[in-house]
Length: 128
Image 1 (spheres, rainbow, N blue to C red):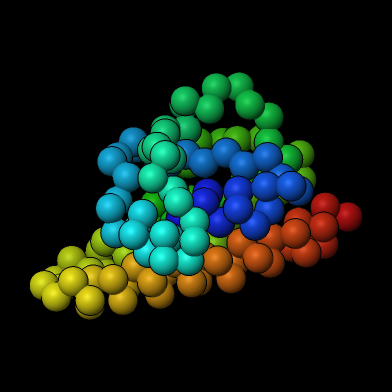
Image 2: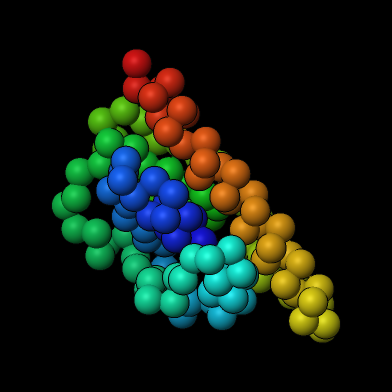
């Protein structure tokens, strides 16, 4: 979801790369709730950090505690930023009604959007 928002909202300002600590299938609920806000992430795919190769980054941004704890060292020209979000699939684990499942995904989606919208000011503030 963060990659979709970053490319959609900030693609003219930033080059966005996204990877996790392990490759997984793209979550159909994430695709669905992003489509609700007009962003199609269905062509995105899960990548591991090693698949990014020797890309040099100005910033490294981790969005879940597992990534922060398991992320290998990535040199960033300016800094590493961590903002943890709950995993919506874990929040929805015991839900049986689809609307309740979607409620968790929508909540995290909206939190991620708010974070991504603040990135330009955060990055400018932190690079000086």
